[in-house]
Image (cartoon, rainbow, N blue to C red; front, top):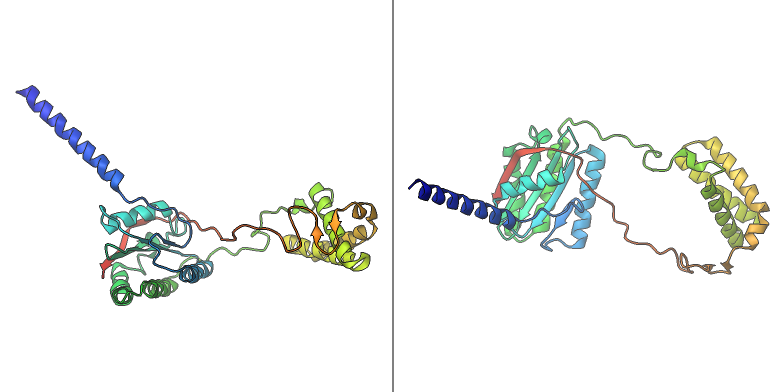
Length: 299
């Protein structure tokens, strides 16, 4: 009897484990954070995504807080609250230790949505405030089929609420800190600097002549030095040095494979301009934490 009972318990445990594994595999995966707006349903046009993205990026640059929008077909078999916290834990929207992130999640086929709020915003973007934004601003537009308008208006209201919160300002970034180029890079003995100056000087002289080309080459290098190093004295020195060097570097200039009027005869450039890939900016969460604050709704 004890053996039969133990066997039955073991069988039930196996079933429970198998069911749990099946449920886990059935969960809707959290998409990668490719930008402030992630639309997996094709609801928003490219222009609408671009406009919303720019609005969110401008807000982050000014206030420091992060907002993200996610549109998925469904969160089933999970409730939207469970799925939303998984998204928050994966994306980590908001600044670390400030936790000033907010996520607007729309499950289109489920006709449900949620505003997930980071710890640092729970005093301003309260559950009641989030619920009012959903009920009074977003869902009326959703009911009329205006998803872009509802999301945009909701984000505007979220931004308005966060604007009134006394959060630490975003760190000021100097021109130098926006670059990964070290001042040592501009050492005149750096071979990359020498080769770059030679190519630039040869190109400018071929296009504009010895005198004007030398002056333009010196001016370009001077602007780069001033931009990256922030020193007007070094910029003037670079202008004089590069200008004179370009003017007297006849040997290298004569050996450059330049095709008159069209550009270098290389695969990097041909008449029309440089070939380039996409210019989309990156976006990532700042390490913010969430604890389930916010509100859910439906339409």
